[in-house]
Length: 307
Image (cartoon, rainbow, N blue to C red; front, side, top):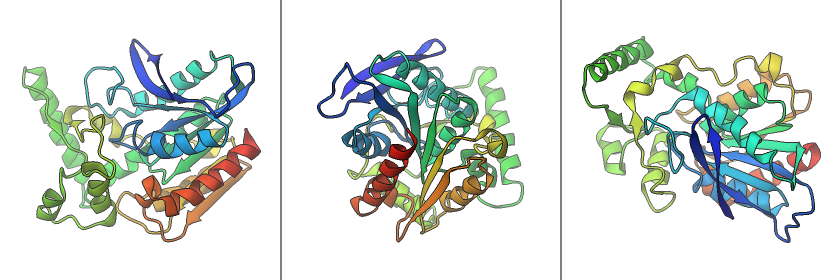
């Protein structure tokens, strides 16, 4: 594995480049960009599980930290900006096509959770990407709009964000919040019992998946754009590449189960498949071998047929 950097606008995006065993620089290899979930980093599921597994199958893989997050540059820090997240993919392709050992006609992407939604949007507008796969892919904009499912929750949130931006414009310090509760105790005190939230806390705040580049920090005043974002917008028009969707059949609040069906139905792709891993929750497909094993097997078959 090699640590690399590539540009998005004026800052560096940090990435881990993995090369197959017995790598020969004189050969041409298919390459797969691996995108992490919302709040995650390249060292967690996207890199350690999916990039690692696909590299073992013979692919060059590139797992990157989103701009403004992890080891990547970009100010302000801890920003979750959909347009920039999508541009990260295009910049990753720009980097891969400069590598002599990458076959530019065989570049694919796989995105996990929110990274899957961003990957779908990027694939629609960058047809250098020849095949798209999502693992528990989620539409971040839809999740933000739903909020806590109370009437006008999104409007209430946008009004609060607006007040904070006004305060910051007048000199106040930025507010950094968290994506999820910071511990199981905080989650219990908040009365949050949904399986996705419970397992998110378990994955991100314990030794199971915890990593310093995933600090559970989110810039509150930068959230407006997410409310109007639709990761699947124009999929029925622009998404023509082969598509593989992987979901678990245990639904939770983050909505990847229904988002998987929505993307499958909306995609224009002539070749598309939806693979449901039986008994798997959203976070089981992050790191549990019983479930990631079948997912990687399906991804391997898909990319072998389409790259």
